[in-house]
Image (cartoon, rainbow over all chains, first blue to last red; front, side):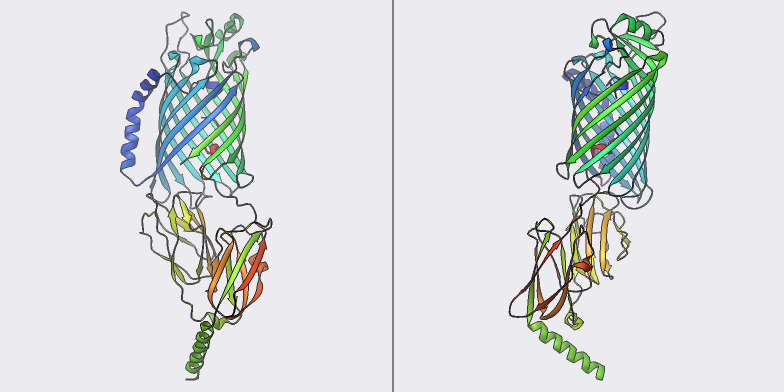
Length: 311
Length: 218
């Protein structure tokens, strides 16, 4: 997430939020129309998180690193429509928001719609499953130059080994389309917030007791990353390899964002405790290391507290 | 002729014994002394003729809020069980258990045909759509059984007086049910009672909600 500069996290001013809603309304209408045609399984879920990011700016040097606390909340509505004995179509939408403690310009809100087709290769809870999905979303930020439309396509594979072990993996292609500002440097694109990337994640969950479980996730991602620098020296170093450069006043009046090619490796360890059959609280620690073009490497650590409720 | 005579005498004897109906009270606790619900108490008459009058009844296991209700159902072998679906969504009920393998394709309401459980044993129920749904049907070889309620107690009534081998079963029991056997003598004068203290293993189930089920990274 940090590799994308937290650009797909959200929660906004009311005006920005309305823009996002308008943009994604057709998607939600399609979802509702599809759901009306079949006897389907609606799921309403809510989630919240408090987290700290020690390098929101994705900076290489100590002087350019900016850390901050954030709080996020998501409400999602999805439904599963069984098709035959082994396929199910899922359609859903989510509204989410995120506020930062210091970096107010990163406050954002978003709306997403997703559609997926799942196949279970057998009967029962322990059958292997695969899923293909696409999603479309819109994110709006308090500092509007970060606003973007989000596209993603994914393939997933999973298997529950037994009541304790659950394994799954996901390959995703994501695209973030932002509007480029005025060109600052002749011959260099100013479209610094439009990104493309491919990622592979592998996850394992282990249930320790009736209420307590732990999970481990790993990430490999290759594609565009955004690194922001406030100091001239770091900026010069980044600009030698940047595909795009744009002012990034969210991080200060002299800050610039640089889009680079990079590969990110990450790991996440989490623990969850079931409060009821419908809700759980958890904590996690996520660490990512990005190797960007021209040796612009950086790391990011993100501890977080989470809460989930599924109706 | 002789066969018919012996059969008639047997039925008369069984009827006469039934007239002296007895009752048994059971209490089940776990190893910490806490009362255990959903334990099946089974009383097997030492004299099998005592169960001659029993007829398998019709039973049902419902699906409410994406859960099997009841969680544990005890039935007599040969019983017919319906699986009504009280949710407003479809379920796909199945069992892989040796005592009864079956699958009810996706259905809603009361559309599913009833299933006959003709072999004693434990049948584990699942739903192919909602993986966390789990339920148990205990198919008893004896018509004399009951299930403990939230207070850990069960009463088996209308039993012919006589000798019984009594045992219990629970889905989380950490030892074989045969090890719980007790010899109990029932008389018409006063109800008999029996107590058990069992070891329960953690009830690890597929979770209904999991934060980790969403990919760790968006």
